[in-house]
Length: 133
Length: 85
Image 1 (tube, each protein chain N blue to C red):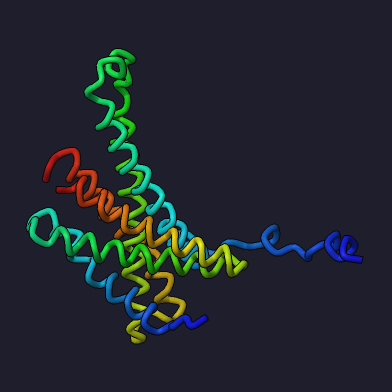
Image 2: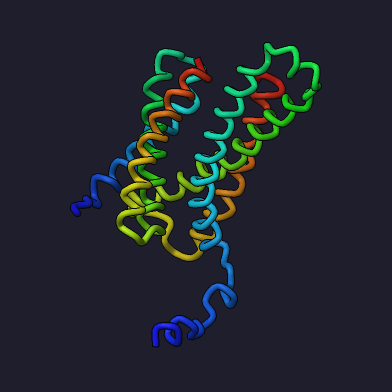
């Protein structure tokens, strides 16, 4: 009896999902939070490990000279995820005041503003690291 | 098991509003670095505990994961401070 109950099918739920922009923003907001925690934790472990083994000649003679670029690429990915989280977070905070942004026209406008703000913040992070603005 | 919803929601919004200027200003004024890291850690803990309470259905596994999450938050705050100082 228990085996028969477990082998029943489910009706399709994820396979027929039609992704809208609003739901994708909400999913990416939550996913960006998780990815940032994992990314920051991994970055800290990575920096500690490199710092511990850098003074060893055997590690230097192996020649891992790409690790600087790996660290920089990881920091850039975290910057992109962070700028999206900040932009969508500002939209959530404006919604939480309960005054603006609930009609469908305002929601579509807010999508474009979130993408624009995400790009602006990411360019600012890139400029900070590369050009020390 | 008592879980309060409104202080969780309110603290998430307050730390988010606090974190917006703090994320830019901590590079300029080094004195608010510790405050920024604590607020960042609290915001991270609130967000991830929300996710764990949503998606982990066994109460023993969920309690264990929440305890480990607190340990992770303290370790991340400590390492972030040593990294940024």
